[in-house]
Length: 206
Ligand SMILES: Nc1ncnc2c1ncn2[C@@H]1O[C@H](COP(=O)(O)OP(=O)(O)OP(=O)(O)O)[C@@H](O)[C@H]1O
Ligand SMILES: [Mg+2]
Image (cartoon, rainbow, N blue to C red; front, side, top):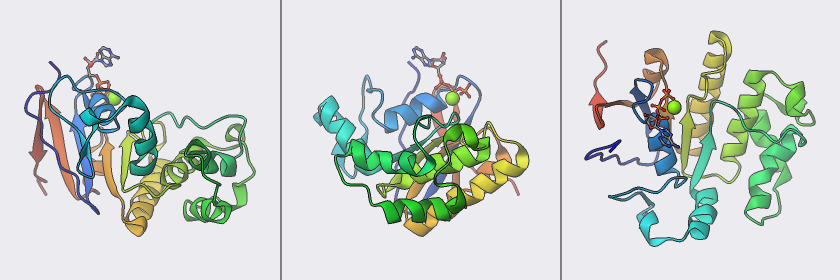
């Protein structure tokens, strides 16, 4: 059993850091919260609706509305431009992309001049900023980010973190971020550590 007696509630406007050793289950926990994996026992609920009561299809379509995902490896579509990547969640949700809204998101992550670039024409930090804009496209109430700055040098990591925190707070969405960095964690409103199958709050020492 990877987790035992874990309870975590994420409310609007909160930002939560999840710390823990490699292999402690941080990514698995985010996958469970995103409904990408199913729990063996217990339950995950989005806005009060338990995923246990939903089919895979229902989870997939609700996920688009409820959760924005940002991973360490940006997972952009290589054959789509930055703008098209940000528009993609609309297409997946069978909605007409709100092009101006998507451009505004790219502007908010500092990439208005690069909307027509393909991922291979962007730096790692820029690609991650596109991935953040994409995660926010459908204005989900919760962003789950798994080491979003793990592939970036310190300067870019800081810039991407600033942007992520800013856009989340501007859009009023909650953030749960896995990180190995105490410094990154200290920028969020609360921290938890996964250790020996349990999730415990960590109190800042400064
Ligand atoms: N698909 C899988 N099938 C079986 N076991 C898995 C799978 N994915 C991860 N695990 C195991 O679950 C445990 C937790 O893995 P997880 O990837 O959640 O750790 P993590 O805390 O994110 O680590 P890291 O900091 O290295 O990313 C590990 O022991 C891992 O080997
Ligand atoms: Mg991981």
